[in-house]
Image 1 (cartoon, rainbow, N blue to C red):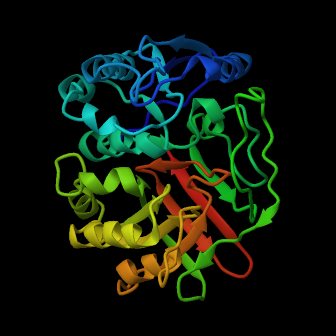
Image 2 (tube, rainbow, N blue to C red):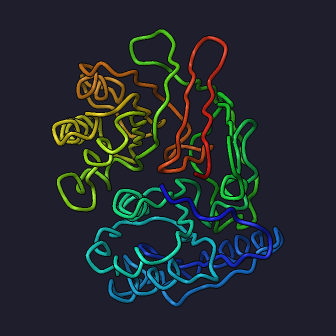
Image 3 (tube, rainbow, N blue to C red):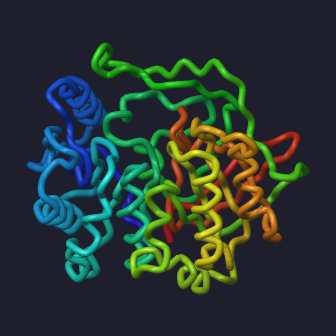
Length: 337
């Protein structure tokens, strides 16, 4: 694995929208988020591909060129898009992979549709990438026990996070309150182990959003089986989270990834908490059990890695240890080689 250098105050952070851009009504939140980075001591460079008028921020060739340029610019230490979207997949055969392969790794930070780009960076180039809140959510204070992505990207060595055991429904309205910084976590929700019992397992982290990653299985951009074979001595911790897909769709996607070999070298599977709907006769948990329950692999449910706040940053490519039992619910990642 190739880890980007630790982020430090004074570094430049690039902002571009590889998928959805930011409309005029949400520009105040964008300004708050950029100012947050500047107050933390970073220089911020905002790109041209930011429009919120269409489903994407710009034509795909323009988005691919700007993302390639930022990721390969030695003066930019991290790239953080405003958020995900719908069609980041149209960048994969437009990015200049040769230029990126020759560059020093840069932190790409994001989640949801950004998983579409971050996972291939890890699988194809061996770059660590940071599955975490996007720019528009960056002003939030981290929940108790969890780390801010800026602190994870700045770290070297072990980083331990513990589940707060709390979550919230819904999100703040950035139009009404562009300066939101605090999550009101008012619901209890601990991690759960499928089938019960405790888990203490290690491996190399890899994963992201289920809906956008499942189309990559069997393509050159989603060769998790090859990555798993390369790390077979340590095993993989495959983490996935469903954004909005109903339980039957989740079951089908997970079955597809299993059949494509994504879990062949898994030492553990981590599933994010979801607000996606159940279906008559099939809950979200039952969908996971139906697709993956036959594997001889521990499965931990309801991690804070999905489209339900709060958020636990994970580094694709980092070695990690997950403990979930009656006393502890924590994950320790080792950042850096």
